[in-house]
Length: 198
Ligand SMILES: [Zn+2]
Image 1 (cartoon, rainbow, N blue to C red):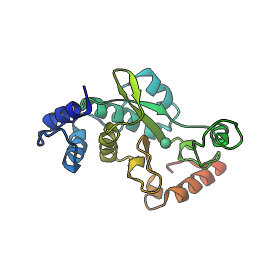
Image 2 (spheres, protein in one colour):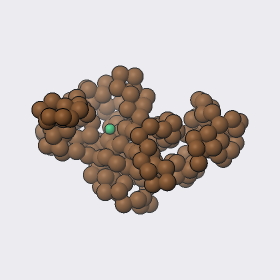
Image 3 (cartoon, rainbow, N blue to C red):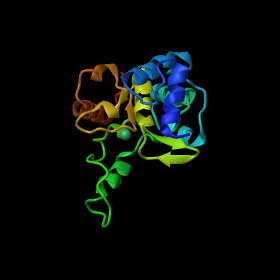
């Protein structure tokens, strides 16, 4: 199924005008459809690869990640959770890429303790088609609409660092913080042993 056919079929399912071009109406309608099948406390298991990464998230976020996979599936989009929590050491190893490791490219600007992936609240998804990973796809925007509807913060809505595969569940206390303020506060909590969502 090519992208146009996919969008048309989503539009058909949603009952919005079918033109194969996804505009705000389609993305919003995709989001609006969500209440139908996915609940953020979902314990309904998804594929093994996703579950392995979901297991690295704090319990409050696990159900959201599953709900996103189910919601995408309900509109004909196959996604997997391909990254979850990274330890500080894993983050430092990523930070070394493009800096101290020869012949590698920079993949992150965050050292250990400075990424939203270090605290169990963030995960990245990949879009798949017939089992093949798609690094670039309009479907990321559709999944972004679904995630936003669920209450997740979507990296594709960020203007400074546009990150379409990225989702995170922001604690209430961080709702009005910038991303860097939140990560700093998460790091403080981590150091003092305080719960992420407390
Ligand atoms: Zn991410």
